[in-house]
Length: 347
Image 1 (cartoon, rainbow, N blue to C red):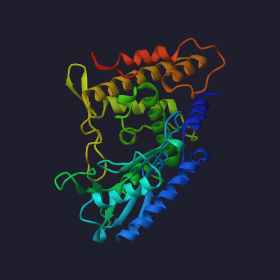
Image 2: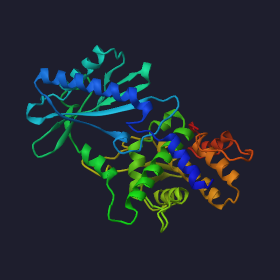
Image 3: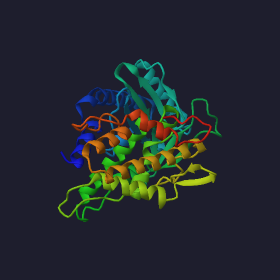
Image 4: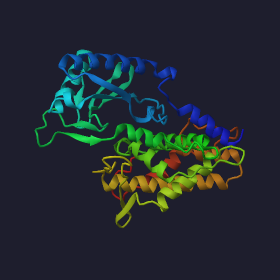
């Protein structure tokens, strides 16, 4: 089996789509919750005019992960002229819907209403927007007890962001193949993040940040016959992220801050407020990943290639027949040493 086929099998093992069988419970729960919210908002005088999926399931970049919840990210949209002036009002209505359904830990966070449903391993995010006749969206921002100075209807472009990630040049040779490869690269890096980083830093390396960085830096690798080389595309893309973009800024010796600008309105920094620890670990471990991938490219023995790739992507990357001589824990120790000196490396 070629190395590309092993990448394909790896991708098949980690990818998650909304129509996948294992997502059935989440999909049914999402549909049921949405129906309840629609009914409640109608009763409250600001009927839902549209709703849509956001996040990785909307951009075909979702991954499955053992021991982690299935995400539901459902946008609820109401008409601007009927929307309450206070953006917390509809968020409280959603909170009540979730609590009536038995969600004990539902809460109002700044950008959305969120809840976990441990029985079915679900994590739910419900952002609420109001929409004007000209198509402009505004997001309900604020926590439960936010006053008029800390709550707002904030300009947003949720559908534009989804379209930005999903768009590609259909007239370009193998354009669809290249976009498929882009989505695979995003999934590989999300699995790498989950495998290599400790929980504290992993949660702060946002999936949308990865998707934007890869899209802006993507180098496809498709030959003249349309066959992909994911290892080459991954190496070239990471190299461009590290060496030709300005995502990582050196703030002092060996320490970095990360900034990735949202490509649509309001053009905010996706990593706003992230610590130097997060920026430094992200950059240094990404550099360490590139070195491992370069070793894979230089390696002649497929068994050794697989050992190296399993050390950064985990056990879902296929094994080779030869006995393994390198342990994941050994390479994870190498990654751990790439963090900030004197801080927890989270590996």
